Structures are given as structure tokens and as C-alpha cells.
Image (cartoon, rainbow, N blue to C red):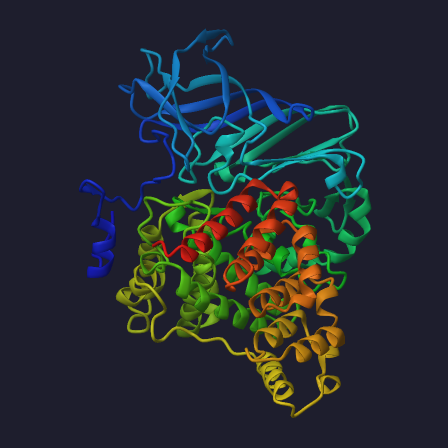
Length: 632
């Protein structure tokens, strides 16, 4: 039951959605599944990986708890799945064919699969459904890579990316974070390849073309993950290690050599790690994200392999998800800040311990600057931590507001109540809601009961609701500061004005974060000669650090620094991570001259991009073309 809410909260919660229907903040508007009548408890997959056809084919067996014994239809989520048959599985294992059909296809959500429920269901008996199917070569969750797009160039690879609502493109299921399932899987592959999943991977598993997995802890559907390729394993610590192609194995072991230390620090601060092993999978460049927190096996982009361990904060972030997101999950995508905002807070805490406060402060300042840019581009109605969310794209509703504003909210609580009290709250929170899904309102009630009311007159419930339901930032939001980044700003301004020479700037001692801040602090009126000298002195166009490259090439495109355009296109072809490339295309598309050039570069690179990345870039160009044509 919800407690009394402020006027703003009440307006958001009870606002109407088209046609006067009441908006329910606890309802997931991005699923067709009738989870009020049936809830999946377990899934058993039996799939063959067909690289020639670029398909998975086989079956999914769903074990369903009956909530409403008068229900006549089981509705599941699918996207571009070819359903061959549906059957009810009897206690003796026999199959009874079930009638099924499809509803209308929605461009964003896919197609509902309606299955006739047996007449004799009851709430005391588990309903078991077997669905035979195969995926489409265009499945939005699956990236099929020919050998030439892998590091080794000898064997193909396929990997999944199920978040946010892409699991439905490779498994017919209730694709919503509001429920959690255990799963098992049998995966058939070419004998020379290795399959891994977000499950109990055994580093000593032989390559026999048949792999079996179990995930005994219940997880939301977006965390079901699969990868198959020429993968090998190397240990890092007692319960940590890395999988990748042999060509990247040594570099990956070095780059992520501190992951066991991160694990030990996280356990000491956030409570028991409840997932068994924690391994990493370094994928080819087409992986669309920096990392994906699939339990037991975080998927990572190779763009983190900078050679100096300077980008490992992404690993700290994915590890922290083992508590926030994986252990305690947002019930709907509207509550994503409970996942990403909480994890960003835990990440900064880990970085303080593993490195130092200065390093953590640098990241906070850069994130704050990104947050302010988000406030300029994200519609005001999506700027709250828990916005009304009943339409739009589940992959891109808030930019990164839920990451950075969520972290600031938790830092605000830490400042007001003290770190010791905040840590007590977090430990109790993870214990209370372990393996559960919760809404923002459940979090708010728990925060009120365990912290706000226990120590009154520090932060009120109205204050907390302001963070959750109002756009922008509260006036008392903590504003991060970094001494090292402030010094980088001063050097940028002094060099631009001619007060110092390039060789006088102490870049040798800078972190990548300081270099990024320096680049972003350069005045808009730099001459071409100054940019040429800067690039030559610092080697920005040839940097091996993907984040520095991203920052530099945004400036290159925005300033139309054409001498670096060849290197810019190399960057766009080298990386497939959405964060690294989409914003560079956006800078080209919006500088007033290079929309067509950017589109041409995209056409040359898109064959190596993941469908999620392609969709993000297509949105960039669609907005730019609309702006160019004066369309609203």
C-alpha cells in the first residue's frame, strides 16, 4: 500500500493516459504478458545454434504459476519469432497440443503470442507449456558475427543483449523485470566453439558441441544471456576470471587483473556476493554497451582494453550490479534508477577504495556535466527519477539521467545522514529485497521507515519525493568538485589565450578523465592552427583510449576540424559501442554542414554495428533531418 504522497507525486501516479485510462506506476507498459493471471517461475531452453542460417532453433518450456484459475489465455512476448507448435506438458511428460495465435504487432514491443489455457487449471498446480520455435536472422537481441568481424578472424560468433525488452526476440516469454525466473539450458553448437551463459559456467568445460547450464537464482528476463564463439578462459582470482578470444586473452587478463580485489572490496562493503563465480566475457567491438551485468558473467566491450587499466570503472559498475539490479531489481523500466542510479553510487564507492577519492571525484564531475547536457535534451516530463512511463522506447527514455541523478540522490542522503548510517541502510536494503523486484514507491516507503523517520528533521519524505517526481535537480543537490579537473580547465584556458605553451601543460600526470575534461574545456573560438598543434602534441586523433577518442571526435565534428575527419571515421569503424559512436554521428549531423557526410560514414560502418546501435544512430539522423526540414 502506498503512503500519502505529495501533490506532484499524486499527479504523476494518477495522471491519465490516452483515452482517460488511469496510469498505474506499478504496471509494466512494455510487456504484453498477463502477469496478473500467470507468472513464469522457471524456463528450460533446448536450442541449436545455426550459424549458416543465423538462427537459434529448438524449444522453450515455461513453468507457470497460475494466479487466476478463470483465465482462458496465456499471453507471452515475442518479436520476429517463428512459432512452430505449442503444447501443454502433462505430469507424465506427454504433450497435448494447445491452440495459439498472434495479436497485432507493435513496432517497439513486438507481437503478443496468445495461448489457450487448459480448462482444468487451478492455483495449486503448476502449468507447463512447451513452445517449439526458431529465431529470425534479424532478432534484435542477437548479433551474428562472421569470422572476419571477430578478433581471430577464423570462427564466427553470436552473442545476445536482452536488455531492455529484447529477450522476446530469442525466447517466447514474459519479458518484464517485474517477475524473476530460474532457468536451465541445453545449447548445441559447432564442436570447435564454446558456449557460455549468465549461469553456472564451468571453466573446464570441454568442447563437445553440447553445453548444459543452470541458473538456480531467480533473475529477470533481461539478464538471460548467451554467447557462442572461439572463446577461452583464464583465471584472475579464486572465483573470478575472463573469457574471450585467444587473441585478446592476455590483454584482458592484464586489464581486468584487479577484479578479484574489486570483488573482495564490494563484499566487505555491500554484503555477501550471492551468485557463485564472477567472470567477465570480452566481446568483439560490435557489442553495443560498455558492459552488461549478466549475473555470473558480465559482458564487456573491448574498447575498455586501453592497456593501462584506466577504464576499469565499467567493471566496477557491472560488478556493483550484482547487488543493485541483479539482486534487487526494478519492477518496471520506469524504476530504472533503482538499478542504474544505485549502481552508479556503489561504483563511485568502489573507485574511492580501489583507487582514491580524487579519481572518484573526477568521474563524478564528468557525470554531472553529462547530466546537465541531458537536462537540455531530455523532455522535462522524463527528467524525474521515477517518471510516468507508458510509451516510448524502453532502451532510451531518459538518456543517462537515471544513472547520474540517481547517484546524486543517494550521495545527498549520505551527506545528510552520514556514511555509516547510509551503509547500514544499504546492507539492510539488499537483505530485505534480495531476489525481489520493487517499485520506486516501495523504495520510498522503505527509505521512510528505515531512515527518514528514524532520524527525523534531516531529510523529509517530501524532499525525497522531490527527487523522485520532479524534473531537474533540487536546490540542495550536491554539486561535485574535482581539484584535478579544475586544474585541467585552467590549463585549457591559459593555453588557448596564449599564456602558456603546450609543452607547459603537465599531461603526463593526468588521468584519462582529466584529459577528457581538458578537451571539453577548450574555448569554442580555437583556430584551426591551434587545433592542428594540439592534435599533433597530444596525439588525440591516434589515442588508444576510447573515451578520450570519443571526447576528441565530438569536438572534431562540432568544430568541423576536417584534418581529423579521416581519423574520426576510423574511430567510427573501430568501435561499435553505442556511447562511443552515436554522439559523434550526432555532432556531424548537427554542425550545419556534415549531415550527408555523417550518413555516408554510417552506411560504410553499419554492417559491423549491433541492431541496438543501428537503431540509436538512425534516431540521430532522423532528428537531424527533421530539424533541417523545419519539422517539429
